[in-house]
View (cartoon, rainbow, N blue to C red):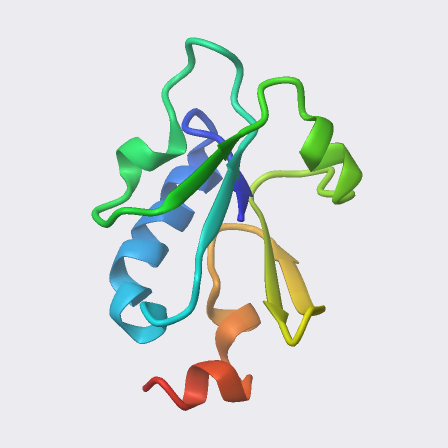
Length: 103
């Protein structure tokens, strides 16, 4: 997930992540927080611990071609299975065997 703690859609995504966390808790979740230095961090909106990579200068965000936030990737077997831009993971997670096995 590429997100910031200041964008409204990112905060809505945090609500979705909090709601669906049990569903995908066995999958690793990495958040690239591309917010500027001093801005609220995305982790402040999450109700569970998550690995955060700070990307204040959007270097990683640009390398991943995540030109809008929130931008979410589903990665398995060392490849990207899908991605979505927006505040819900439903369209990204639904229908993938990795998540169906956990529900």
